[in-house]
Image 1 (cartoon, protein in one colour):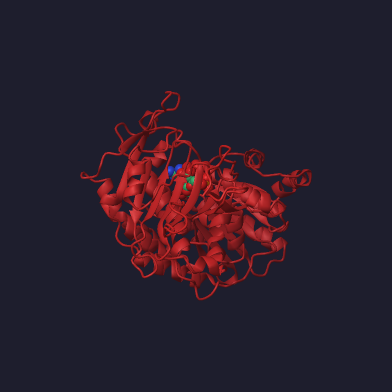
Image 2 (image 1 turned 90 degrees about the vertical axis):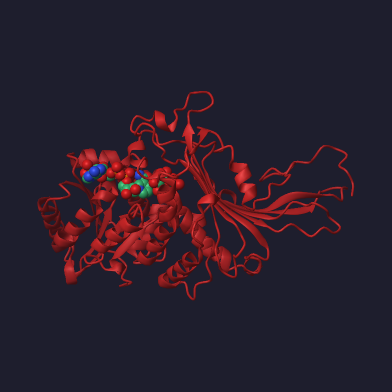
Length: 504
Ligand SMILES: NC(=O)C1=CN([C@@H]2O[C@H](COP(=O)(O)OP(=O)(O)OC[C@H]3O[C@@H](n4cnc5c(N)ncnc54)[C@H](OP(=O)(O)O)[C@@H]3O)[C@@H](O)[C@H]2O)C=CC1
Ligand SMILES: O=C1O[C@H](COP(=O)(O)O)[C@@H](O)[C@H](O)[C@H]1O
């Protein structure tokens, strides 16, 4: 790792510039960094893709997704677009890369750049990564006279073998410290907050183990289906799409041991250490589903998507229970669950604590720490207090940290803004390391082979807009979660119960 930040006269090239990710996330993230003055005005930004379009068409496409919260920021859009240039070329032919490099070298010469700093972002489908990475290295890398960084998107392969193959092709070309495997969940505010939360609060670290915690849930819910992108999703499924990467990243940060330092390799060492302690996934501790049309018939089922192969058994919902075989977590069931076409959009973490020993208070609700990654970042600890007023009974309430009210004046970057800034600063701590990737695939591949093999279960149907498969609650209880009578508890405001509250 050079540790050298890219500041002035940096060149950024986004491959796949005509695509969904580049248009909706990457260029808006670059604009966000420019707006917040984390990206210099001396930067030159290229979009590269096969699609033929003019510079103006390209700029018109990308600016539609820029966040301009103030009148002032609206004025910055044109300034930013002045830095952007579109370059059309084929991914498998030298010409486009050679022309691109000529333009880059001309820019660097005009600016008197002695040590080129070039950031290459592959916003491309996985099948195109290697051909482009090979040619970028051959035609666009500044060699020893400069520094190049390559950002590669998930999915890194689709199982252990393809991930190893991908790595074997990238490793000879790009050094590990030039490579940034991005999982954008690692750029989300509440995910970045997990390390400070756990290791800067003694009250939490004192109870953060199986002596006090009886179950952990990490949930990913989306209120929409594949919406015509079934062609992509049908070969992936929800487990590859968000569980083997996003949810597993959240799990490692939530449960790993304290790193010896805040340095990238110390953090990533502990993530790898944790993953090595996860027991092989048990095919009997899995619930899988596929959405059907909504109850009112207005929303289509997965198989109604014309881009999906007829009769597909693709999994659009999964709940998986796993266990970490180490002193801290042995015996604590951890449920990862993720689904498309559900009743809401939400990503949260729910840590349930042991029940209070019966004493002067009987059957009080268990404490739960809930961390909401999105929407509306928040974290709250459900706890029991005396009902205000003359009553001596208890009620469930919470210690609540809602970012939108507590941190009104803070600028919270989008995930991709935060991570691209880390790449510019050569900070690898929020990126996926090669050994971490291999262990995560070795964990999920046997389960995927079973689920997608002849013995695999038929996904349980669930209606678009529902909470998921009807067996979900039973699955949760069988896997250690205790549903509680939270009657009267309504986050974030607890309203008084009916008058004449029962006294102690
Ligand atoms: N979209 C999202 O929200 C997210 C995407 N990702 C990952 O980012 C990567 C890019 O995703 P996304 O932008 O949605 O992908 P797209 O399907 O939009 O493809 C991006 C661009 O790549 C080119 N392309 C598409 N298919 C091919 C092909 N078969 N051969 C060569 N070029 C092709 C096209 O550009 P042209 O034809 O003009 O060259 C297209 O505009 C993927 O790996 C995805 O998993 C990760 C997180 C979220
Ligand atoms: O990687 C992916 O993530 C998105 C969800 O990202 P979010 O930041 O909107 O939560 C998911 O929709 C997509 O299918 C998947 O490829």
